[in-house]
Image 1 (cartoon, rainbow, N blue to C red):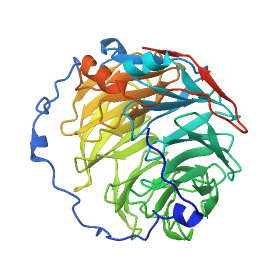
Image 2: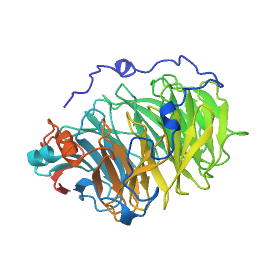
Image 3: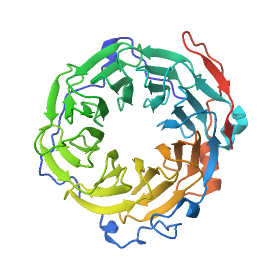
Image 4: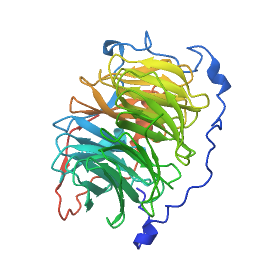
Length: 443
């Protein structure tokens, strides 16, 4: 497994944080639509395995190749290492997180053993690997952020700061710097190498429900929840709030989801009332207000290969938005609420987590449901996609996590791909937190 980048000082930890450049004009067309996507449903090149576009759970195929059942409560959060084909993590309402591996090779090497990460005193609701996959961050409703060595499960740091629960966390896209939003109205930033606090972003008047680094790593974006309803853009080095987007023409209720375009120019945000806005994060101007949802927007994401964004809501809709024209390209209906949507890294596909317990794959060009993966007996709370897009990890209210085949892959190919090499559980020192090797995986 890759070693993390080494920094010898706080200054080196800030190496990847720079000033904003290359501002996108408010009226600029981000990209032209793929002409191949102008066909009718069924023209996508991905053959649907469903009888209809939404399909009940009874019609879905259980394509799970691995079921993880070590959690005793809801699995709220899942993560896949961006640098490893078989390294994943889960966090749950039992105050625990686990690091484990996927695939037949991993199962044979480890016997299904996993790293059980203890030390949180409330639900673990957010997880993220750094860019090298060498460090896992866990965020809990106890207000703690903990960093763990992926190769040993050893607790590296407990990051102090938030006075209340951690809502979300995110790593810098290239450096070992991490941010987290809290119920105490603040966003914290730490050096992931030494655990030192680098910045506290204060200004929200409500819980900071969502946020991230811009993809170029030069800005921090945060969305305020109930009692706030603002999108704030921060300069990481100084902590200065560069833009506060709120008021007329923007959301009137608390923000619940945000994503930034891959070129780091515009953000799409969703709110409790179902409203969706697109804003220029450099000028602070609201470029457009999008209508279509009837209830809280729980997730937002930009495609890496199509000029579209998606939003998912408790109303059961996944809406595909054309960013060039700020119009809906399609509505993907689900039987129950959509909690998470993740775009495929290299194909025009998006995966959704639904409260009916099914993970679905949709073609972004046609809005057709390509596949549905059942297996969970209760709602899916989170999903993550493997680096090559071949596998999907899901966490559920049924206390399990499942790894399923992607909609365009075959079982034999995926089991081989997921095998991987490298990480073997080995007990490491944990100065202040407990580490256990635990079973719970079945292949």
